[in-house]
Amino acid sequence: MHEAYGEAYFVVRGELIEGDRVHGPGTYVAFGPKTSHRPRTETGVRAFGFNYDVRPDEPA
View (spheres, rainbow, N blue to C red):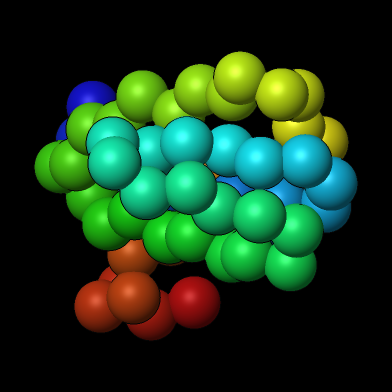
């Protein structure tokens, strides 16, 4: 679980499965703080993951 900050990923190639949803190339998926997830793949994936270090309600 990401307690304080969110996380996201962008699928470049292949597919990434999150729960019952399959995310293909070009998909951007974002998760807010205090959420958990367990992405997986059955065919392979190339993706970039991002951890946010500032919450949207905090000044930059």
